[in-house]
Length: 323
Image (cartoon, rainbow, N blue to C red; front, side):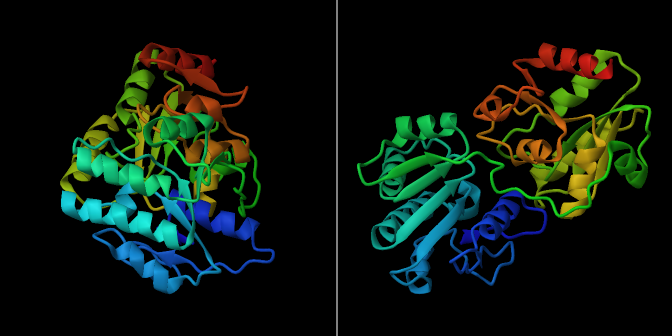
């Protein structure tokens, strides 16, 4: 099982919990990319290095890859094309299952787009978190009669090891006020895809005019870099008032779940997204979600959630939660 097993990484958490739920009759070897951990690691993100997995996996083994394009496809165009071709060749020689956590960007180069299509059509099984994702993938890449494109809802393998506490107990533990409406955006702080919409959440809380509402943005930077630092600077500047708080901290699993239990609602007002692990986590813990209707997010929402289509609806959702 190949994933980025980094501390606090949502995809790595998903991979770990999927393995835990399917251990009967199976042995999992965790191959991590270098930014994370695992039983050992492989730098699979440049050139034809995916072919190293031919040596790691015997013909009787399945290879299960938790896919985000940034994890495996990097470098200049020639390197990216070599990556694609090597994944396609690997798929032709081993049983490969890919859990698609985020879609590939559309490439302007016809050659690169063709190589991407060739590789995906050779993957034996591709797992998506929503029908929206599956339909989009099929429309772009098609499929073959020997290929399975299946949907497994995002939260099917999620479990929480944290001690169950009430909302009041969670707030007391985190030092949060008990008489405020607490809205939460949680997870890695990242300017990359998906666009998480931090700015629209901050603007909605300000525009709602509800002094009893607090927005807490909690998490750690996904990586170092000028784009990440620029986003953090904007968030720090926005978090100077009484209604917006930025908590820059690494979250272990228990603390992550504690924050979700403390909130009145979790916000996922993303502008772009295929699906959301945070949304699935909130459902597991019984916390309401306000989510946008982009990608597969509306499909993930349940009857207690609020699905918004634009900024005005997000403002109204904040007012509704404050009542």
